[in-house]
Image (cartoon, rainbow, N blue to C red; front, side):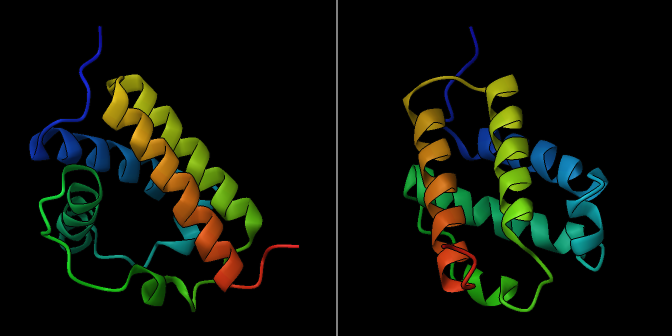
Length: 118
């Protein structure tokens, strides 16, 4: 049985595996080619650790970082697909399910704020 997401080290494992996929993805990779991954990954670990574990290590505005990217609904769909796939490969349990719910909420909110919803 796969473990649930219950530690910062597990969040780091998820985020590293997920963004390795994002950077190699045919649709998402080009959009994020400019990202300095060694700098960005710890920020993303802080974000998800704050969201899922309540450690309050993230400070920032994630939407502002995405507002100028050339992205559409298909990018959000692919982002969620890769996130869910990576999560399901490594983790299972209530916090893993919460991560899926949070990811879907983030995608919906960002699309709404970018004017991509009907």
